[in-house]
Length: 266
Image (cartoon, rainbow, N blue to C red; front, side, top):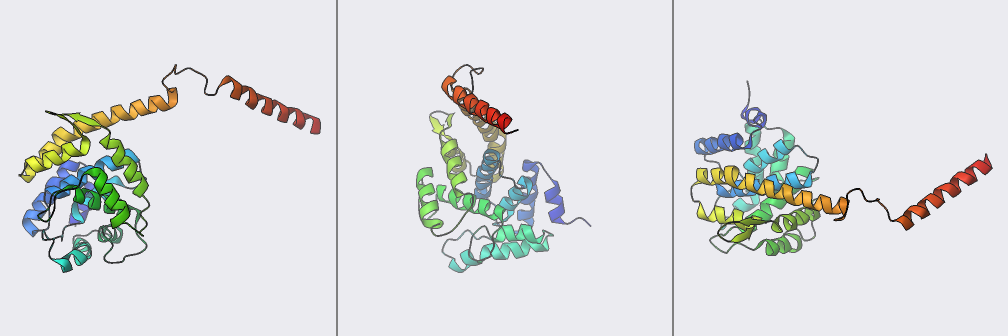
C-alpha cells in the first residue's frame, strides 16, 4: 500500500504538493502557514540559481514538512529545542525514509545530529535567513543585508555550512534584480510585500506561484543572460579572439619551442 511519503514525493508539481500538505495540515494540525511558502519560494529560487547537485524534489518537499511540529510561540523555549527532532519522528510514521527524516531534523542544530546531510545545510540557510526577514510579535523583520550579517556572524558563528558563501552570493544576486510595482522594488522586498498584504494562505500561495514566480523567473533568466554575455563577449564582437594578439604569440612560441625540442630528442 502506498504511503503518504510515496504519494507526495511522486507528485512533481509544486502547487499540487502544497495543496496536499495544506489538506494534511487541516486533518492532522501540523504547522503549515504562509511562512512555509515564503521559505519554499526562496529555496526554489536558490536551487535554480545554484544548480547544487541534490534532489530538488526531495529538498522542496522537506522544506514544506521540516517545521511540521513547530509551534507559533517564541516563548516556548523547550519546543524550540525539540520541534525539529519531533517532526522527524512524526514524518517517519508517514513513511519517509531515514535520510529524509534526518534532513528535516537537521534544519536546526539542537539535536546535535552529525554528520549533517548536504540537503540539511540548504534547509538551514533558507529557514534561518527567511525567518529573519519576517515580522514577529517581539520584533520587526530584518532587511536582507542585515539578515545576511546575522546569519553569518551570529547564527552560524563557529559552525560550518558548506553552502553559506553560495547562498550569500545568491541573495546579493536576486537583490540586484528590480521588480516594477507601483514603485520599483527588489525581489525580496516584493516577496515580503505580498506576504504582509495577503492574510489568507490560499490566496498567498496563488499570488506566489501564479504571479510572483513567472515574473521573477523571467527577470532572473534575463539577468543571467546579460551576465553570461558580458563574461563571454566582454561587451564586444562575439567573434573576437579569445586571447589578445600578444598572448596568442607567446602561447604559439611556447608550443613551437616544445615541438622543436621533442623532434630533436627523437
